Length: 130
Image: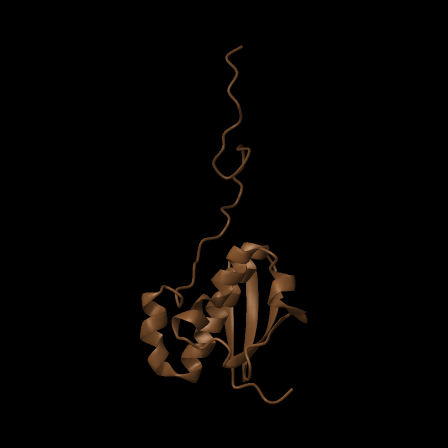
């Protein structure tokens, strides 16, 4: 493949998406697989395509991404952020549109660690009176 137009990284929970944007026809390869194959749920596919729809750039760029860690939701949100950041690198004027849509905000929420003496992060053991 030719030299990428831009590269960007998106993160969510424990997922990391390294995104490369090429001038092209709208083809998307995620870990060597198509978007429909990688994300079988339509809601996740729609979430991934949101930045491209917001700036009306569907079918203008080929996207090649390497996704690692986490589950499908974390990976789709990481990819969404990566695509949005890459689009801003291509054209800085798209930033306001993407920012208004909340697509440039890194969701910093993570799983809270388990505490000693508790069953989960906050769930206390069951109390028995006798």
